Image (cartoon, rainbow, N blue to C red; front, side, top):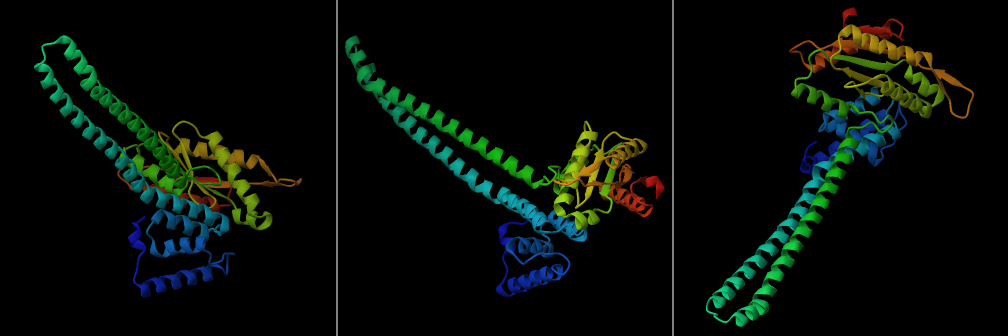
Length: 345
């Protein structure tokens, strides 16, 4: 996301952008129930200006899957605020902490120089003294207080540094939590698309893509579940599926919610046929279970489809994802509740 001054425009440009945002909200409101409140305004504004491609992808995928609503918008808006805070607040916090540290050190240095100069003067006086009692009295009356003051100032500096270390650690913890929040899907507690993209970037930068398979899952007819039973039941289905994934994967396997009802699984050190077996095992577990509706005797049966691809040395990650998407579309076209791999394309 760009810096704050990227959001500043001439008055006529700002008015034009605002009108474009309102026009898009009005168009969307014909198919989904949203109002031009500050949250939706901010998110639709982002789709038009496209400062954050990951956020724009998240919003557009929700809109395309008819999953964009007040609740999902609030989740995205929370992530947007977290990212802004992470980018802009820390610099002020760190600046304040560093100023405190600099002030403590400067105070200590000034005191140390003053005391050192005072002690040098007193030592010169002692050099001319031949009487032991006079020397001891001079040390007690003139040198000892200066030494004690130096000790007190040094102890105070140590305490100031310790306090600042606590502040820095607390700030780091807050930043880590904000970063995690921005990369986590609030509903399922799985990584979201931003988290997934960061993980892919990490694998690419650390050259850990060899012998890697990728699976894209999608809940079959998820819109029907929302339409027939409501979004709360749809949310329960998503959470149930997330728990199923977490039970079935292990080790270095990585699962993320990358769309409304879409989940993407990364399987390091896994051949294509083994990735197919993992995906089909999950499919069977989901299909064999029934999701009970709260406070009713009703149950609903879920099914999922998936596409599997295998990394080819030298290719872009988008190519790997694209093949998995195409295999998923083929599974949907062939009746759903099935798994296809790139070899079926």
